[in-house]
Amino acid sequence: MKRRFLRVARRWRAVIGRDQRAHRDSFVALVVSAVTSLVAGVTLATTTDTLEELPGLLLLVPAALAVKGNVFGALGSRFGTSIHAGTFRLSPRLDSAVGENIAAAMLLSLAISVVIAVLAKGVAIVFDVSPTMSLADFIVVSTVGGLLASVLILAITLLLAGGSGRYGWDLDNVVSPLVTAASDLMSLPALILAAQLAGVEVFTPLIAVVVSVLSVGGVAWSLLTRHHTLRAIVRESIPVLTLAGLLDLIAGITIEKRLDELLEYPVLLVLLPGFLGSAGGLGGVLSSRLSSKVHLGLLHPGPVPRGSAGADIAMIFGLSIPVFAITGIVAELGGVLTNQASPGLVDVVAVALLGGLLATVCVVIVAYYATIFAVRFGLDPDTHGIPMVTSALDFVGAFALILAIVAVGVA
Image (cartoon, rainbow, N blue to C red; front, side, top):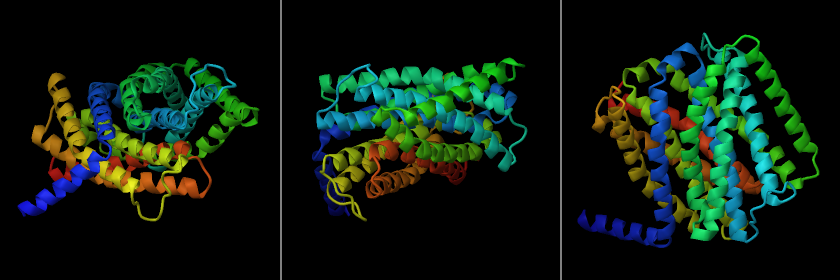
């Protein structure tokens, strides 16, 4: 037994030794994401009155957090590929590659926020979640909260891209976890702030109409513009982001249906954003690394992952255990600091680890085969990989977390 353990340990060190810096940078970024998710988790756990006053708001939480990670994680992934290719240049001009990417990201953030609001109302009706907010309330909360967070997350993404060349970071290893961290840090507070605009007579419907018209007009312009990169990004992104948003909303249904059990131990609400963010961050790292290697001709994905793809997958599994353990510890700490009821540190960490390992299996499958799918159909894996990975992880992650809660005996 001891010899077998030593052989496994030597093989693992050999895998990590191939790219120790990638392992270290990714781990640090994922830990930062787990720690900053505390803000989102505490916000969620301490605003239960708002969740009860605006039924259906919890539906938007996974989607609101994921939209920013999807849009700006994909933006960062594209920047990472251009940095590896030596073509990245920071420029605010719309006719530059960076300018077109920025314009596309902001347009997509607005448009998908409206789409998610409409889908949220529809999903609530289909799954008999009642009562819920009005459609106008959903649109205002989703778009206003989304735009407030998007401006700040865009600034952070640009700072990461600019700093990668100066400080020698590999953007593929850090952008997805740190964008996820920024999304957790800013999206949920922005959503709760925007919720104060819900239910205001005349004013709320007026804002809903204005942002809906702007989003439709912006998308129409982007599809007709002469800016090729912007047009391609928007055209390819809208279907995948819409599908991703639908998966996020189904994840929200899962959580909404379990709200009473989660309110029994609010520390589980503190855990929720960090858990989903850690799973999405791991998937984003893997997806970004695979996409860059495909673009650079260093990886030709086959039915079964081999070579550098296998090493990347091994790295993700190795990162998952400490990252989810830290996520559980951080959630318990947040519960203690804000006086939230908890089943205990051991149970919270057990839930995070068990659910996290289940989610990591999904991370690997979706990230690898989403890259294959994109390559086979001539699509950009940078644009499609991260949205599909993070949203599939929100969908599966919500189920994995609930399953882990039941398995551990917390609920």
